[in-house]
Image (cartoon, rainbow over all chains, first blue to last red):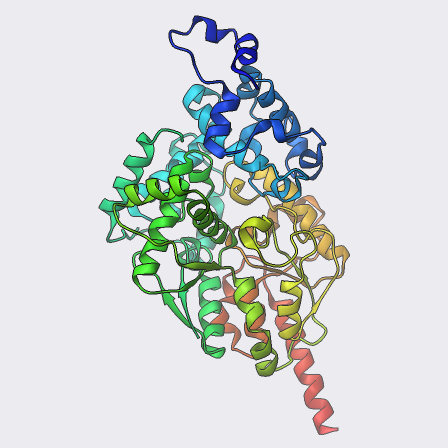
Length: 196
Length: 298
């Protein structure tokens, strides 16, 4: 996809102060995968377990990326419905890796349009990563509590707490790893790392 | 045999029966599990969905610690952790720039020499020993071997078994004396990490897995991932209610099934920690035992 073409399809770039990289080249740089490789056979969407819950199917996500139709692509929740089961990646007849591209798109969407990430999914990821940052490992009771506080469904699964406890599956005291400081530095550095 | 061990967060908490049963069969099979000291979470879906570098750096730190401990190979019994560790290893191996950035982020040199194994890979190497030590209590127990999405896929990462028509779990289960059934959903996703954030999707996906196993005549489903287990076991109550409460389907970790095959005490395999009681499987074993005793007396 030429830069010229992408400036036609995304009018925003005319008004921006400095020329921006098109989404397709940004994703290509991040993943090493050329979106033009996809010839739209649709095999990825045919095998996708989440396809019937997605407003854009996997091959349509890739098509919009090829055309640099960023707005339509990033306005859709479809990229957040992907479970990364890697069925698409396993079956792609042209060795493209839709699962890796969707990951890169999610990372880009978080920067460009953070408000469009489905609330519960965003709450879960934040709560999960906070657990690792705090303790180095996921302390499941803390994860659930933090997820609910961040906007997860407040009363879901509450009734299962006693049965979790009786099965010895829940603890109330998190354990911190020894190298927690070094681990937090990894988080800091990865937060400031620019995409490749 | 000595092997490095990365339990991952679930095996210390909601899937502790996986750790218990793994420890029990390791002892029976003369495998010494050497836990990586001070390992951290692999980052799971939340890291790879939001920050690629973090999703490589977190497993890389753990692999670096394993390297320092001189562990040539590391077992990651959780299929999702296995996928993250093996993916990170490959990302570093195939891209020098990423390798350089990861070294800079870790602040330490790192050879990326540690091989990551799934439980299917490790136990596939041990089918001879399992067969030799098998006490045959599972004869004719029909089980559906559930690989889920990440145990043998994607092939570039796993480089093991067939990604569309795998047989490693069936071979292990046969060595342990049980009978694998043919079914349709062995590789379909259970809904994985959406257990809390999109429970309805998990119910939809896990329900069709349970239905398929039932239709194939399975008496239990064998899994190798704590998330698969939680979605099929913990969420099964809610799923079965929608299906007019059919017979509950016990969900066993692969290590529990192998443990039963080796004749280990069920109490050491953490079987009482499941939400769906595995009692029908234990009853079946007892019936097989009684039949064998009767034959001896006859």
